[in-house]
Length: 231
Image (cartoon, rainbow, N blue to C red; front, side, top):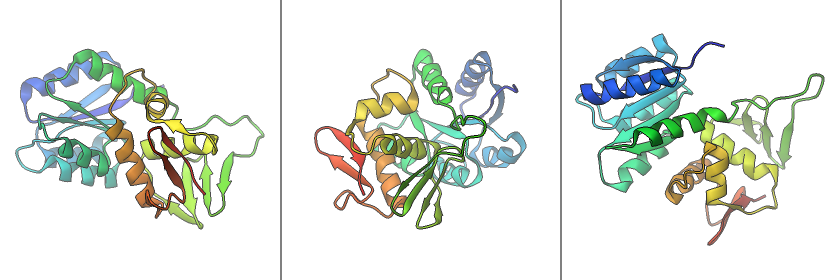
């Protein structure tokens, strides 16, 4: 199996070097870029599985870089930010980042959270000779093998995290899933995370499904607990 590829987009040379060494020790082939534009230019060349993205870049706003990256690649995107405002981190998740790490960061936590993303298989294993498993809920179809979601026949473009969340909710439609449980299953980690991370991904998922918290047609909020599938 070929090693995973990582692209580090970071303007601070010392942080860039640290991230490269950490990822190399974790078995990644690593490329680097010191500016947002250089990072965007290298995506087709590198075809990364993981991108670490600093939000404070000298040429382009990191949020805009993240937005553009998500239209170019399905790689995991981990945002690194020294900004203290929670809204900046949430906006990063909203435009397609899968996780964020606040500077200064713990080396052990960074490695653990990257490893957690790659532990969950990208495709569901299907025994030979068995038809692909598709979960159908009225107009909503979730194909676990191809990782495609269709609503009234229209393909819905989801990030990896959004698909994982929807698939978990659909696996047991009547169950109410606590936020901590969703975090543990999606990221395969005991790190408790932040409720807002799940909430932002759920909000993005609802938007793409044409749903909202009030109607809860596809995803219902159970106040004080978490979420369950609607419909």
